[in-house]
Each structure stands twice: as C-alpha cells, then as structure tokens.
Length: 404
Image 1 (cartoon, rainbow, N blue to C red):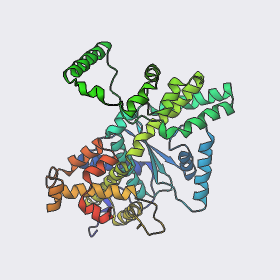
Image 2: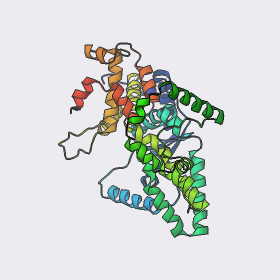
Image 3: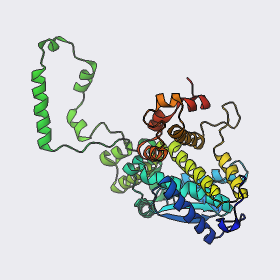
C-alpha cells in the first residue's frame, strides 16, 4: 500500500457518509464488477436500517414481510439479549433473494464498511442468487415479496375467523416439519396414456425376449412378499412415495379444512424458498467474499480508495474469514466464508499458476488462465456438495487438514 491516492480520485474520504456518496461508490463498484468480473445481477434496492430494525429482520428469517407466530418473537428476544449483553454482534448487512434485490445496510457502518458490504451483498450475493441453477429451479425472486404479503394477510384473516389458537396449532405443526417439507429433486412430467401403453408394450416384449424358465424355481424375495401385502391402488392414489411431508399432508389429509391446507402450503412455499440457501452456504458466502475482496483491491489499485479506508476494509474482511483452530475455545465448526474464499482463490491460482499436482488433478482448468469463466460456471452449476467434490484441491486439503 505504498501508493498514495489523490483526493480528487477518491470515492470517499473519512468515515462519514451520505446517500450521494453511497450512490457514487455503488456506481463505481458496480461498473468494476461488470467490467472485470462479468457479474450479472438483479436491480438493487438499498435500505438503511438501525440496529433495532436489524434485530426485527433477524426474527423474521431476514424477510421484510412475515406472518405472525410466537417463534419469531422468541427468536427476537434471544437475539436481542445476546446483542445487549455483548455476546453477539449484528451483521453489517442483510440481503434478500428478490427482484429487485433488497440490501439492508446498517446506519452505524462507516463509509469504508458500506463500500465493503455493498460489494459483498449487492453484487456478490446478488449475482449468485440470480445465476445459480438451484435458485433458478426452486425460487421465484420476482414473486416472493408479493407472496409474503399475501401470506401475512391470509394468516391474519384466518386468525380473525377461526381464532388465534386454531391457527397457531396449524403453524406449530407445519413449522415442525419445515425441514421435511421441501422438494429436493424435480420430477419428470407425467406420461400421457399413449406413452404409458407404449412403455407397457416395450416392457412385455423385453420380458418375453429375456424369459428364462429357471427363474420360477427361485423362492420369492422379501421385497416381493412385502409388496403383496400392500394395496397398490391406494399407493398409486396417494402418489407414494412422497419426500415432501407438508405437500403430502396438504394434498391427502382427510381431516384438514381448506384454510388449514392453505396455511400448510404457505409454510411449505417458504421452506422451499430457503432450501437452496442451506445447500449453497459455502459457495454463496465464498462468492460474495471473493467478489468484495477482489473489487476492493481493484479500487485501491486504481487510487479510488485511500490507505486508511483500505486498512479498515482489510481488518473487517479478516474478522469475517477468521477460522479458529479445532482446539480453540472459539471453534464452532468450519467458517463458510473462509473455506469459500480459499476455494475461489485456489481456482484462480490453479487457472493462472498451477503446480504439477494441480495439472494432474485439474487438467481442464490448470494453466488455462480463464479463472473468471471457471468461477462463473461453478457459481451457476454447483451446490456445496458437488462444488467441494469437484474443486477442493490437495493443497487446500493439506492447508485445512481435511484428513480421515
């Protein structure tokens, strides 16, 4: 950091900020993200909030709208108690997978920190939400806010008509099954009757060609014996097996009233909305952290951020990616920010300066120099499980001591 930036080229100076400065910084960061990293994002809507409003957002799973339920109040009191006693700080930002992408910034942030979290949330997370296939498949960013508005109003009307206790009982039961109330795989479309008949005919022809009289002498398998004891018509009418318990109850319960089914559907839709986020935490945070770290360094190299601001940015960045050792009292598992950033930077290294080991493990990308394209493809096509299987290098395995 030997180069001194001229004041005329700086995006901001000092720790204070106003909306004009924030807008100017965002425009510069966005232009650099598109030009250098080829990011593709939703339009951004920034909101400045207080610490109390951030606690409110925590209680409603980060959403700006949510129906009423006692569990949200319990979560709010828990988070508020930790915050007031200094046991846990608040996030610098909060971002919502919506179109436009809503980014909440804390009013207590300094301008350097606002620039950092703008790059992290408004560009990094935003790009990941828009382009990752899991989010494309299971979420509708353009409709979630209007659906939450409907859900909130519907729950209120149900409480007025059927009573608070009755609605709360349904919500309690549905919340208990939220983790089992998601679809994990897209099902193929139902076959037409003509295609079903064709499949039956092909199967019978295959059985005739492969028939062997010796098979009739074998005792029946345990699975066949179990199947005989089941009612195939009932199993077919219930569309079993079904992985999504909330969907199964919504469609097949003989005791639920229509309003209760709709409440279960509301909880199921919200559970499905958050499903991709649980599957991509390392990738999502790694993408956002790589984006903010890369963009902030580019701005500093261009003389648009002062040394003092860059030092503050690096201090906050280091706090985010700190990974305690396993025997450290602060250890609580793998830090997804740290592992995600290390993997993104390792892909960049393999693409530009590979070792002989890298060429053996990653022949398709080693030394090709196209790290931007590799990262964009990885962010779009993978979830955490497949991403780590595909791109975790021996160098990182040794660094993180991932041995069994």
